[in-house]
Length: 286
Length: 158
Image (cartoon, rainbow over all chains, first blue to last red; front, side, top):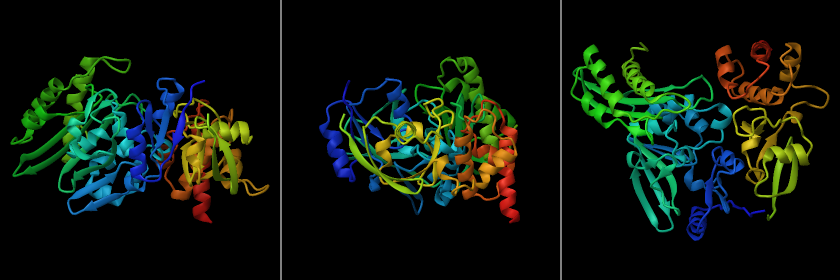
């Protein structure tokens, strides 16, 4: 029988020391809603489970002026219960309502959802649309990584073996018009088929600012840079929306899998983009 | 594997146990403490049959390591009744025939308890939304939802 150790340090310094010392097989756990199914399916064989649950340094939501900082250990339900998030990160609040179910939301953390790097991660899409930056730390020091360059592939990120996500930071979106849509095969506990998030600012009838993000349509959650570029400076007429849908359908890079085909995902990406823009502008769903 | 000593409050009583790092809370509850209310369903956090309250909030005992509950408070369905007096929700499940095979019932009741503690008079939609992670394969949702709603109304009228 192989040996697995468990450690639950009380300080960040101690956690980073353990993470830095261990050569291989360290798995960081918080709510353990991702790690335990993998462990039980024998997909992973940790030598050390490093629980970061007790690290106060990674907790809390702070809204300071225009910048919101969310500690990596914040659970999805804590996001839902936070007035600061509702006011300053409306899109993340919307996404948290679609996240798994209340049982998982009580344990799953925002840092874990990002570090797990599922292409369909439900917190990644709104955070990409919010232009979030990650505060990453290790015994060697700290660094910032924009979320848009954090993911490198399914389950893969730029995190080094000795690094932890400490917090997620983003500017308040209170002045933006925004919407998040998760499209799955059923209402509850569905893995997204496609998810879309948009953040817009309209000035003099024209799009002055646009952030678009997609989930489950590429090897990683992705920013829709081309779609954003297309939208900025345009009046959102029916024709422009139609064209934006096509830009989005071309920009995404989905695969065919058990849940849907590539062409269906491309089509739906465009449709959902159109719906999200309309929702953001207060027009409801079409 | 090295055992660790943990202390928790279980159904109102302090308990100290020695657990291995890979032991699940669900297995400790069922196999070592013989609290077999929480059920082993899917084992991967999809069905909600293993729901218990951890620090007052419903969570999945099958996705929780026993070592991780050191210092926390756990309530299982066995901890709801006060002596011989069932929790109003348990009574309501009986009155509404909200129990068919019974496998989902303990988890369903724990989730519903937490909902009513948070929001004493939820709408039907709020009830359905809150129990979305608790699956009933007998598909007895209608009676489950009305059982929960009956408690909400009784509470409001009281």
